[in-house]
Amino acid sequence: MESTIDKEIGVFGGLFISIVSEMRGSAPVWEDFTTKATKLHTSLKGTLVAISAFLDAFQKIADLATGSRGATKELGTALTRLCMRHKAIETKLKKFTG
Image (cartoon, rainbow, N blue to C red):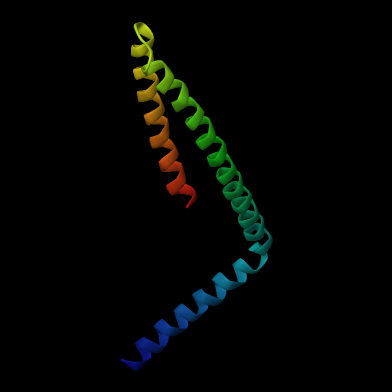
């Protein structure tokens, strides 16, 4: 029984050494990946600020159109629905960057 356990430990030890040896040269790749991921995260946060400001302005236009008379009121309702859909996308993006 002991010899089986010793063999398994030897196999796992050899596997560990093999993996560590292969990963030694990959540090620059991982550093590049983390740098790019950080840049993406920063860009997404900036994009969220711009999207939020845009949707606030868009909602003001939709509210003005909804408060008017005639066909413009229907257009305002459609714009409000569109704005709400875009705000849902914004919320999902916030979850992604959070």
